[in-house]
Length: 65
Image (cartoon, rainbow, N blue to C red; front, side, top):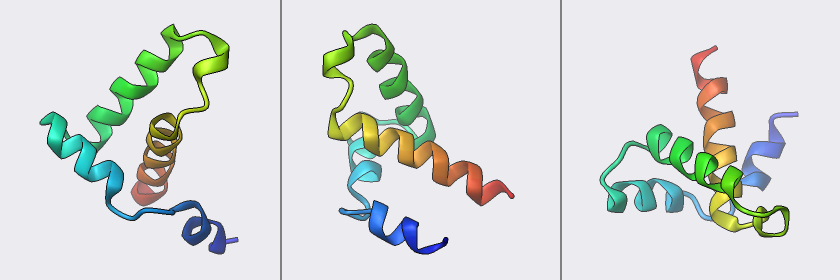
């Protein structure tokens, strides 16, 4: 079950770099990306950035436990 994490992360550190470039923390940037995606039409919700944000949120929840 723990192997899914290594297969889900294709480019380690890419999302964190994007958040740093935007001047935000990883979780704040992920929340912003997810909120913006809710305003988009259904056909545009499969972006790489959105998938990275959702994965970042999932991994942050796992870390707290």
